[in-house]
Length: 316
Image (cartoon, rainbow, N blue to C red; front, side):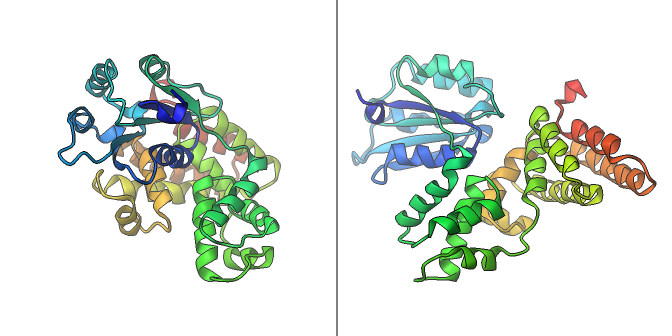
């Protein structure tokens, strides 16, 4: 069997957007795919694959954030994988931290009957990737415009993809140049602070500390850094208060977010904290703001705060 014909696939990597895109490509456009979030697993979801379809149409199951599967969900998965349906693709997506490896328990289950693949995209390849995404949408994106998008929006593939859609809509039918990209996204915000927030609220302590160090070395305003952290916390509190099963587009509107990908990412980050933890972090941000304005060193205040957010509860 070629990898594309195997019945089961485990895709792992740092970026959930890239994982989902790769999963949908594996499944193909002609297959009826059901998508389930591992954190929202209720039991019985694999039954659709194990039961023959009444009308014989192709079926598939895509499980995102499968590292959040409950123990019962893992047992169901292990049982199904003893005899998976060769005609019904099952794709598991596992998001891991920076430099982390594939989840060993999932690899052990899948490698006997399917493929295990790392999905990643290096920064040097982002511009070329954007150009290809543009072609697939019949957009004439100049290479220098793709590079400008990366410079302006950062390295997040989901943000870049959404930016490409916005740019194409704003200048429909035109060749998308560097000048048009700069005009569309002028004054969007500091992506380095966004990166820090993603690392910290993703509870990737090592990467969050490195990101903060880069900001401090470049002499970024410490109150601006703190303001970015506070803004992200407010977004997570709004997302945390909304129903867990709300579709991303609806969640984005209800939480006041600009993009669907933000809703997906912020929901994933909010799940890493209890509501009580988020409220406590808010209190610590207020205290950090008071300390900075009273003359305390940002080299003490901000690392302590970021360590509190990004560290696992048992380690803090």
